[in-house]
Amino acid sequence: MLGEQKICFSGVQPSGNLTIGNYLGAIRNFATFSEAYKCFYCVVDQHAITVRQTPADLRRRTYETLALYMACGLDPEKNTLYVQSHVPAHAELSWILNCYTMFGELSRMTQFKDKSSKHADNVNAGLFTYPVLMASDILLYQTDVVPVGIDQKQHVELCRNIAERFNQVFPDTFTVPEPIIPQNGKKIMSLADPTKKMSKSDENQNAIVYILDDRDTIIRKFRRAVTDSDTAVRFAEGKDGINNLMTIYSCFTGKNMDEIEREFAGKGYGDFKLAVGEVTADALAPVQARYKELLADKAGLEAQMKRGAEEAAYYARKTLSKVQKKLGFVQIR
Ligand code: ATP
Ligand code: LTN
Image (cartoon, rainbow, N blue to C red; front, top):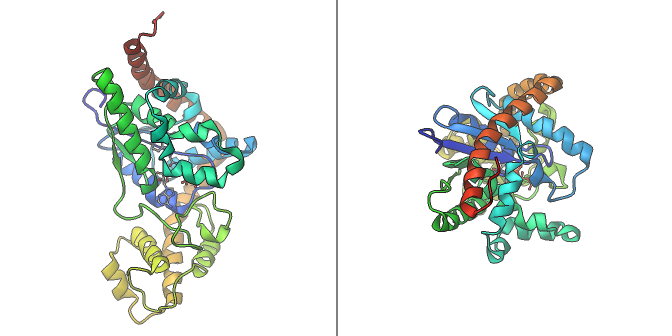
């Protein structure tokens, strides 16, 4: 809470091209909080460097992610949109919270285990303390709710533990946040291996549908999606591929599983896959058109970055000063 207003915070890494998993699990839902909450949506570039990035790509993707936020309906007048590295308080609070986070807690994070096995040649300390920086992002703004896909639930729970631990020593410092996980779309699976999360860092391009893929590419990728040897479109245990396609179709059309089963009764997987591709392409077309316009105006994006960072820094400073005072750091301002 900031005064009377409830706060919403979330972030996306500019670490690759964004997928329909990022869209359905997170970004699409962000705009729904704008009326009832004061919202901060951050492009978390400092998180992205926990795995190696090419500087030119990181720079370009930072602009792209901000443009995509706006193209997905986030009005910069109603939401604070900014880049993490522009607000130094994130890194400052992160150091402090490192000292209130246990080695054992961080060792249990499944994302750390996954990423350290994927990047075995670069298991750096930043990858390990990644959830502490994420906790700092959230706690700096006295956040009440954090909309994320289910893979981030464990990190938000750790953030709650850190906040509670700190509050026990220094009462009333942080609001303890709640994760908000969408009912539908919380975990979109890979089209090539539907037992795995669709991830923007997957090497297999056929596994992923990007928000910015063109219509033909989207339809082709869905046509190739791995399914099973059954023929009926029905949501059932063990039919991971079809379940995933039905979830995507449901997210884009608002239809429930029964309605989808009825709609495709007597039809085969081929017809269904084509329909999933078409509704996805139709839904993404306006986002793509708006994105192109926004990205063409680099100066406009930079002005937004500046405005967003100034606004975020104002709130972040308040929490950081309170924390520093409580800890016993000498204030010289
Ligand atoms: P990487 O694959 O590089 O680890 P990521 O896509 O998992 O990246 P982010 O870009 O930081 O990570 O994720 C942004 C948001 O998108 C988070 O809230 C995350 O939970 C959500 N998200 C990511 N992938 C999916 C998915 N397949 N289904 C639903 N939500 C997802
Ligand atoms: N770790 C998140 C991105 C992220 C985030 C946050 C999400 C960084 N800071 C704060 C919500 C709140 C991920 O999706 N990989």
